[in-house]
Image 1 (cartoon, rainbow, N blue to C red):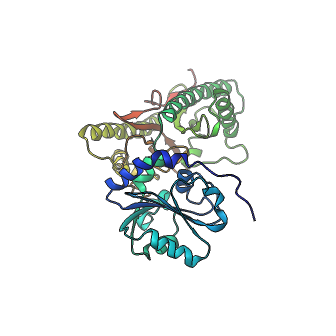
Image 2: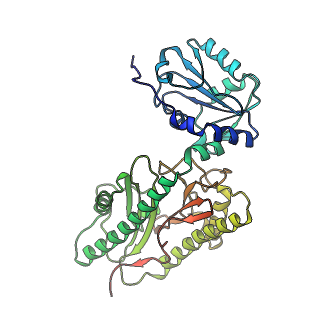
Image 3: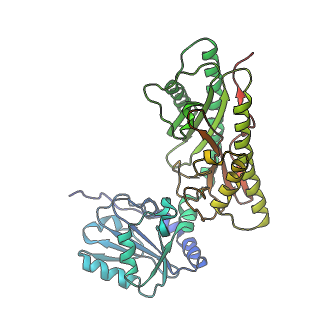
Length: 403
């Protein structure tokens, strides 16, 4: 049997408890019930700060009054510095009794649960646990907006770091395209794996080497949005479209930057790819314009609405069937974060884009056997509204070779 070494200060939940309770009341809830086992619920694991525990625990943060932790008898040490009430159980009957008594008087509580699995990212509590909690007589609703605010919103330090990472990635993309052009013009063989290795080395040199990765692909390879080359991948040659998707951050506690850039290995971009890129660029820019307009109007913005705006542009141009993924994903300490996604295709994401959240806007067109392309920028919702954090978003595909 493993032993948990040391206890925690519960710094994060201590600091946020008043704000959490105010948000719970504002949402018309009686409490937020955090549950975890073996760090399967990353929200509970991060907010409570205990990591992987081998026994089930619950933490009720009520709208009013002190929180209560329900913990197992053999794992008391990690909770030694818990500043509020603790209830201990050993057997499953005791757990059920402790849960019923703790939730007595509660009517509606939030958990990391998504009705009908509409938003998989937030669906972290098992159906069995939801059933157990409902058996006490309470209504369980999604904690989606609470998770956004207290887990996924960026701190000022994270925003500054993100801007630094964004600038570095844009510079790396430009330098990588220049290096590729020089190599192809000189008759060198550069494949997709080698180009990716260039990018990763440059990330290390620029100080953005936490969780780094990249997709380097020809336009044909990029018709698979999550392309992964085999045996080195394709060799770049004159006349190829080039897609570069790259993402990284400065350190584990910071947030990611994530960008996609397109280029053409020739002196002039042909009409077909130029037209397709213009469609996804206009879709991207329509999303940004909508965000600004909605913010100015003072109304809440849901992730699915932004997806609709973006998708309507691509569909209106006749390529809707080839835009086969959501418009964008949440960004926080994970590349695909726990906040609202820009999605009304894969899921129906009704979560609000509140101040502090960051996300990608990345429409694409993927025609199997012919071409794939994407443009990707990042957006942060600041106190004064939406901010595009990607430097100088690409307006046209770049032609890499001289005449």
